Image (cartoon, rainbow, N blue to C red; front, side):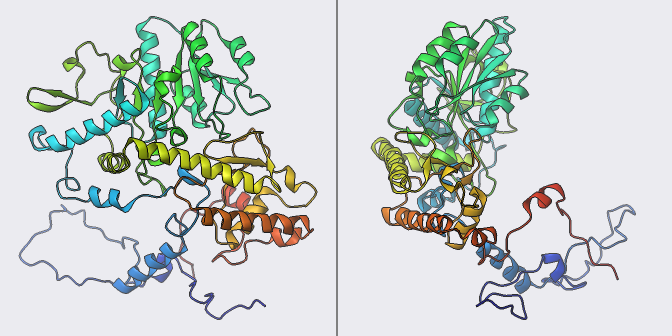
Length: 498
């Protein structure tokens, strides 16, 4: 039985008004007297109208934002099937270290002599990334994975320009991340798509046919967006190098192979590393991100400034091109030196795990994904045959003739207490459901999620499509008209007029 309450609340799930709707003119949490004996320094530019902010007491502010936080779903709340792509467990030790005095109160414009420890920390974090990837150089400054892509492709363009070659075609497989072609285009390249084989990997014959003297390189994601390792990656690297191009690898899925495969051994020239995906720095909710880029010997001279070097006086931050010895940096990507808080967290994660622990983490990520794949494949339709890497991918053919779509199933999963999996991505799979459990989930939590999904599939097969069309039922808001919300978004609150 369902019923409507007078307040709109559902037990302790409170109906929360916008903070502007709660505001009252003149209400405030502070009471400061007018300053005496001072003159205005605004030069006659004093505001003559209300600033437009809500008037609230302190308890109102605290309650409002506490209630909003309770409506969020996070990795601390439960199993999150979008995994490291969006949110993985962030060990509390990392947070404790990042808040230590001397680290949390650093300023990027301090004199170099006062931040020797911070520079050493950046250098140490860089050393770990170089060892794990086998690459000779790294740029720590990119502020996110997407900016890391930009960094790598700008280095490739700088190297081509230095060679005097006007190569402007970049090959991008269908199984690459969607940001890859956008990054190539932003750097002035034209994008040439490479189709996938029936098993979800790069079509090697199609790739070879597209090689030519105008090819700048390839942007390949490995493991790819379908959660599969590209078996021909070494041959692809050799072929693109023989054609005079460079190999950019999207390292967003490095979490599946860290400690087991060194990208340098695969022939990669540049690869960004998402610290939030691989080394547990926070990212869900918009950042701050961090996307260091490792470079091969061929591209290392073109890496951007700044970077840390060690000399007889200690650690030094190279910030201008004229300081460089044989280096030809393409410029600067970021105002200062990178996301320091993320370096601290990532290095804490690496040092607390050690090389053997990082190897185990990647193995556990792959094990969890394949266990989930084995549990669900009896009812869900697997997109590609064989084992997966860190994420399991299904298409929507198991829902054929049920009247239930991928979106309907995802909405029903919310009522079971889980955030939905990634839907409709990658685009090469119809009605895709992409599930990544990550390495920290227990068998019990994965089983609970799988049991919930399988129960919903059984309900869909029973013919109860109407149930799915109206889901979710238990959320603070019922299903929205997502098309109308995208086309006619209400982005600004307007007070009601009398």
